[in-house]
Amino acid sequence: MSEEYDAFTQPGSSEPMGEPLGPDKALSLVCALWLLNSAIGAVVALREKLPAEWVAGVYVGRDASAGFFKGGGTALSPGLPMMAIQAFCTILSTRSGRAGMAGSAGLTLLGVGGTIGVLVETITYRVLSPKTFNHHKAAIVLAAIVLTPLMSILSWRRLQQLRRGR
Image (cartoon, rainbow, N blue to C red):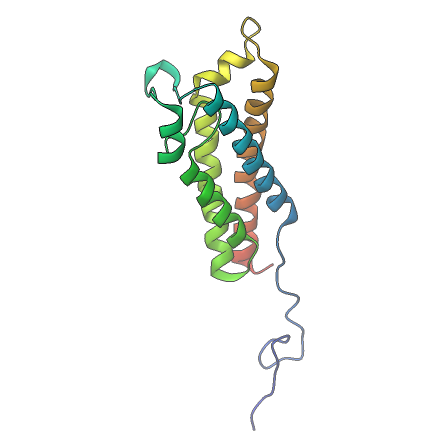
């Protein structure tokens, strides 16, 4: 005698498995805002020719445009490759299963990297300093300071939910 079951019940049981885990709307919103903020930062940095420059001269970019398109980023944004990977991971993170886990893991790593990036960038301290404060650039920097760790936290939470299947 074979047991019958469908996609919504546990094999060998009439108990429902529960609904599949849907996308995390907060994570998707934070990722969209991060991409928007990064795009605005890139436009400002490219217009004002602001290459990436890390604290203590560890890294000093020469050309904002080359840094943006090749991956090193600008003073106010990550590079285009990182933004493209982040957009792809955001789409994947809305799925369930392995694809969702891969997207969420990628967003976690990108968020950690982005958090480090904004904290080592000299413009962060320059635009927030009382002597050299610039409210337009400070808004971009502050948004990055909030959104990148938030993206890491929410994507880590999403990854854990997908692993548990809830």
